[in-house]
Length: 423
Image 1 (cartoon, rainbow, N blue to C red):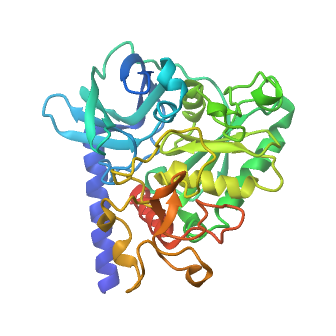
Image 2 (cartoon, rainbow, N blue to C red; image 1 turned 60 degrees about the horizontal axis):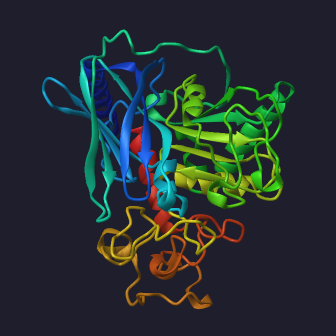
């Protein structure tokens, strides 16, 4: 009887929350494209366009982001009442570029966008950036007339397919896989690579135990040439999404500045997260929280591990726990507690995994064999050898080849984020 009662109450609550979503939103997406411009110390926003997309893949319940992850934060308010309707944290390529040497010498514009459930009434969109003290500051706002004739509705016909389907997108984590550097005769290869991505993700815990909470779909958009750009080897390819190795001068870092094209392709299915499969044998990839992930699909030794590691960045912003191998300058200032759940500078360790340490665990914790697979506070992480600490000697976010999966801190954070999307 108790189980029946709880089931009934959950059903009633679900109907109530869906009714609230329907009160304010249509079940489709409002995409706001803009340009993010500046240098290492300044940034500004400039409007590009508004686009109506046919699907909304997100939750109908968790519309307000309570995680406060990311370097940026978007908020959408009802214009008339001032009620906060929707918010999400995210990061961008521009955020990372600001920390490299080039940003000290010149200015750059990156195309960016945010996606929101399509409002039934006029709204105000605000974009906030995280400041050097770790707090958010409003940088930009834009008023949206939802009946404007200038909200673009163009939609290219694209082939899509299911890779792994579990149910209603509003109650699942929805991943869209995009093709990059596959020519028109490589469709079956791309489908096979999509299946490999799903298999790799669902082989690792805690994704394995939560596979029924995910939908994965593929979007097929062939390129004119096979492969992607490798500037360091003077290889240049004409591809759909303009992906490239040697991002920020790092050989294995593979990303694209062409986020507008990425969003255009992703819009053909309901999605929460975008992952691009690049048709390359060369080791490499990258991922940015709530923005997109990208990696080589044909590296026999490492593709599977790269998928899972990079998805950790994309899905909830897990920090890299290794030292060096980057072009960033002071990516994690040691006088500020990082927002990422799996590293700390000890400035606010109480907010991290301190209460999960075994009694008597030394802080810092020696990274020797006596602490293998024990939760601790190990110095070295976030690319820094000093002043930044990780919870595990060798988690998937540190050395993906030699680790035995995610550490307990990452596992817990991943499970919480899965529940956030599926509620």
